[in-house]
Image 1 (cartoon, one colour):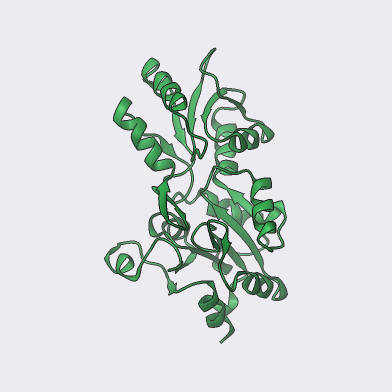
Image 2 (cartoon, rainbow, N blue to C red):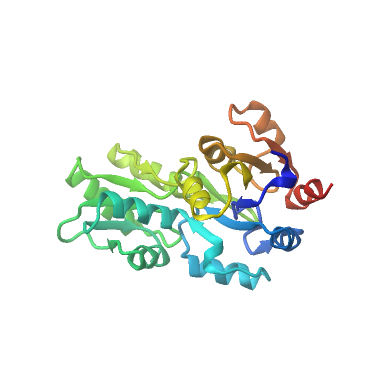
Length: 265
């Protein structure tokens, strides 16, 4: 199906629509086009450091008109997974206060203390990370080698104005060096988030388009879900990366502006 016939646009955020606190040019114009053509856009982000309310405020402060319905995060996806597999269980969470609040609001018994019975260990992209938090999660994983261990997303680095900083995968690898365990990752490239977004929309799978800047998360998730993908070069991936990778997007554009221009042709 051609780009002109796409109606459901599933957009990554960091490196795709903004970098740090800077909104990329053409984003509002692109979102306006989607709305005017009867389509829908959902921001599908692996970044688990913020709640949906935080993201609404962040994009609103950048001048983007959004509501909570425009977002589906790895924290929300993780909450769905936990409620399905660990309903009513006590989950230790190494994450930001926003992440813990989001989990609790979703009905997950998320705790930040190692005391008492812990049924599952969860790690996220923690921008409030302390050494004590690392000690706590290592203690739990050492204490019970069979305890389920989950993480929100496998992103290696989070883009900023000055380059990448350690994301969830990098944090979990530090833990792995200490305890010899890696978690089950919930977010992209697993197809779960894409499937949920498509199923929640009124559109068919072939009408959906995943747009992101990372091959191993954004593009891989779309490929795994059988959805067409666009890799924008405004974030992490380069044309050289794409040429070398086994993961191939259906389309490659410099940025959102070029994608919009192509759709309008």
